Image 1 (cartoon, rainbow, N blue to C red):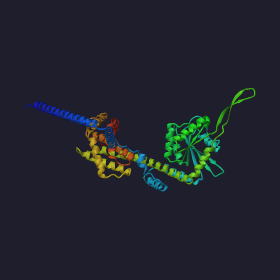
Image 2 (cartoon, one colour):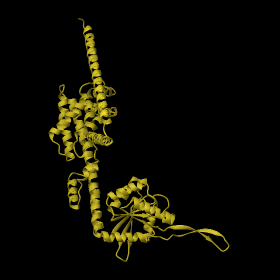
Image 3 (spheres, helix red, strand yellow):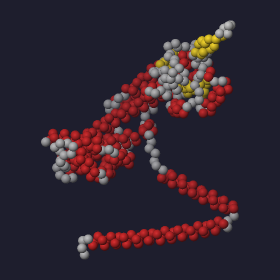
Image 4 (cartoon, helix red, strand yellow):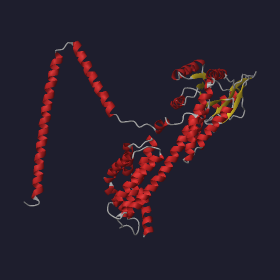
Length: 500
């Protein structure tokens, strides 16, 4: 038997086996179909003999069984939802002044920037020392916040303009009444401002206030409803002021108020008129007409009564709730500063271990020794990153994660080495170099991708989730690697030429 006859005979045998298997499957499918048909006919004959009442019971039972199967299948097969970072880590934020102060001291010892959080504590102390209630006027651009404050505080230095977005900063105006009501009225930028910094300022100031007056001038848009939901989530006492009521007839005004109160059942809605100027027509005895501007009467009495009533009903809870909000704001700023610090330090660690992995690949003295070096460095890098994020990870779990990541790398190692070899050809004098230099570039790509995947997982979930980290690592190895390979090739060539 020749060498060419052997594979031909084997192919014939395989085809015959495949034909027999296919024929068996077809006969099995035919048998199952006949059995199902027979069963279906038997059930149909049985149902045909049942009374209408029993048919209804049978149909209801069958529907209930199908519904139960569907619900169980959905519960078992639905994709798991990843919680946002703020939900995962929000529960660990300091809840009171003492715990926040302790957290700040610990953060200082770690080199974290705590200036933003400490500023909120200083602002808390400053406002607590004053016998003043802060009321912030919040709302969409050109809703009339500044004009309303001007009408309440009788302040002349407030810039009022019919164009959108007059307010570009946080401004405070004092209002004092003989009954001992001392208010600090805050004019904040509009929530739909084109500058995100202005929006951020306005939201923070709302959280520092005792009471929020949300100013609108008509039906609320979807964005305004969403913003009100945000304010409700911040647990700030809220009043909605419907401004510019002179625009509407009495019937239209009642209809708008009714719709707002229906959509916002938990929030008090009050009509106001901020005053300002209005154009009137004058006619003299000869019938000559001309136009002039006059001051429009401000209608703020109902709003001021609502504010006083809220102050009386809240009592000491006003200050307590404001203090809790400021502590929460400071804690969130500390959390963001901590995340920024960890991300920056994590990137430094990834660069350090990536560099070590590249040097280790070039220094390998025997085939396979670089793999041992990389495995050890990979474990050490992940342990360093989990320590940075204060995540407890057992060494066996870290080693298992590295083993799974190595299996992922093994499927792509040939392609990585081929690509790095092509990239290195662009460097004069090293285009034909193989071995350690090519492995150095490949391990640079691997360690950078692995490190960033671990950092991203720790940042988002607060723990080392193996599946999530491997998914991110997969994305890193599946993306556009050529530009990054060129970067690591330059580093490797520089190190190689230093040794030469």
